[in-house]
Image (tube, rainbow, N blue to C red; front, side, top):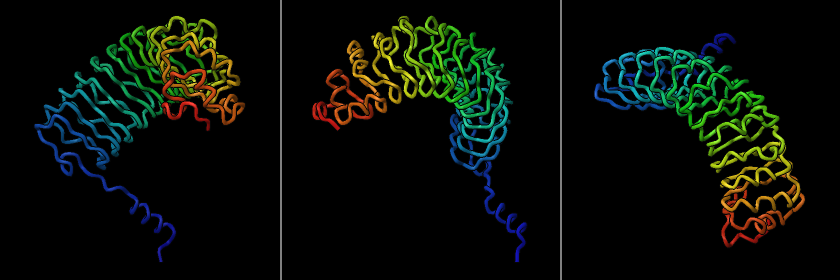
Length: 327
C-alpha cells in the first residue's frame, strides 16, 4: 500500500500539465506573419528565429514564465502574452517596431525595460501586481495605457504621455485623482473600484476633452456645482455605486448620452425632474436607489413619464409596447 507521501507524489504527477513546444509540437513557418496559439500548453517562447516576417505573436493562456528569444523578430508589431505566468518585463530591446504589447493577467510587479519601445501605442498590463506607475519615460507615443486590477495607490509619472487617449486605472487602491495631469487628448478615463471619497478640485480644469468617464464603485458624494462645466464632449458618465443624492450638477452636462447612477442615494423624483434638460440622453441606469423602493411597482412608469425619450432604463430596452407598463 502506498504511503501518504507516495500518494501525494503520484497525485502531483497526474496533475502535472504536459507542456508542448513552440516550433515542434506547434509548427511555425518562416513565411508566417501571424502566429496565434491560445490555450496551447506552451511553456516557452522558442524556435522563432526564422520567422523574420512575423508581425503579430499571440500566445494567450499558455504557461510561459519568461519573455525570451524574440531578438530576431525586428518586424513584430503586436505581442500578446495575456494570461501566462510571466514575472518580469524583459528581452524586448530589439522590438523597435512594436506598437501593441499585452502582458495582462501575469505576475509582473514592475513596469520596466520598455525604453527601446519608442513606437509603442498600446500597453496592456491589467491584473498584475504593479504598485507604481513608472518606466514609461520613452513611450511618448502611447495612446492607450491599461493598468487596471493592480496595486496602484497614486497616479504619477504620466504627465509626458501627451498622446494618451485612453487611461484605464480601475480596480486599484487610488484614494484621490488630484495628481492626474492635464492630458488634453484623453478621451476615456476609468477609475472604477478604487478608494475615491472626494472630487479632485483640479480635475475640473483638466482633461476637458473627455468623452467617457468611469468612476463607479467608489465613495464619491454628489459633484459640486460647476464641476463639469468644461466637459463639453462628455457623453458617457458612470457613477454607479457611490454616495450621490443630488443630480443638479449632472443635469448640466448637456452632451450626456449614457448615465449610470444605480446603487446610490437618490430618493426623490425631484432629482429625476432635473434630468429633463438632458435631451441627448439615451440610457439611464438608476435602479437600487431609495427612489425605487419608495415608488414600488410604479418606479419604471414614473421615470419614463419624466424622461419619455430615453431608449433604455436600467437593463430594459424601451419601446412603445413597454413605455407605460409598470413592474
